[in-house]
Length: 115
Image 1 (tube, rainbow, N blue to C red):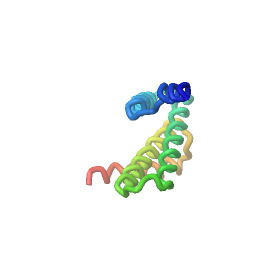
Image 2 (image 1 turned 90 degrees about the vertical axis):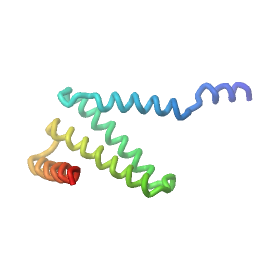
Image 3 (image 1 turned 60 degrees about the horizontal axis):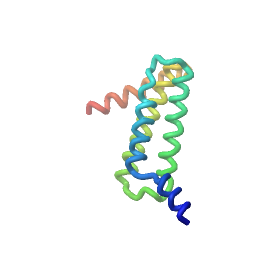
Image 4 (image 1 turned 60 degrees about the vertical axis):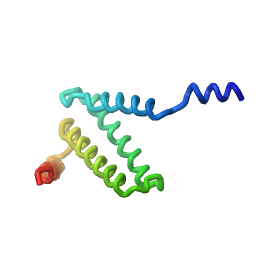
């Protein structure tokens, strides 16, 4: 059992290690310039999609009991979706009608920010 305890201790996930890792991931993800090549932008889009999936899993689980936290997470997912739409516009993955719909939604969001 000593070996197992040593392995557990050496591989412990604590709050600080998770926060440090998340901070580095956040830095890497959001410091990809929008003028990067399409491969980097596609990678950033994939990461955003994966992050949204993780948050959605928490939202449909019974782990989150606080309605306030649920609302915050839903708002965050909406902001991530906006980032994804911006990337899709930059990489020309959207048609003209899609662009018009995105522009309308972005305009509504910008307007509601000043209300």
